[in-house]
Length: 115
Image (cartoon, rainbow, N blue to C red; front, side):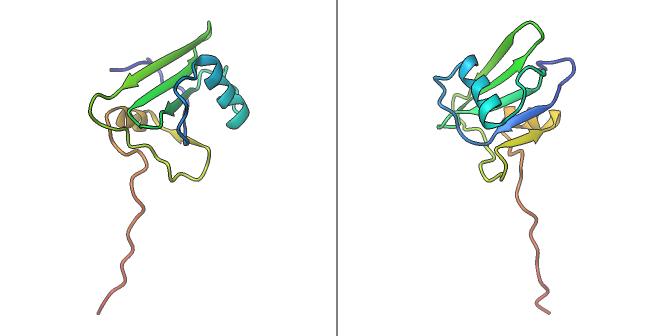
């Protein structure tokens, strides 16, 4: 499913969020913790502690919208080892995340010759 005709910037909030927070609480996180302008149309992605739910917050020129997804049996592969508080995603990475794939991947392996 495509949510947008044209995907703007997408930022993932690295830390888990109390999902009792709704639009106002998430806007507070975007502006106070991440120090981004929440009124730009950028998508901000948040995950709960159990990592089975996520929320996507965005401004659509007339007000804030909040998109919610709950997985029934799986968990989202949340990139908790990212160093910055906000991690920028591409449209493809957002699609992968929503499909259950790991968007960060693993670090490259380096081998030394044993010969």
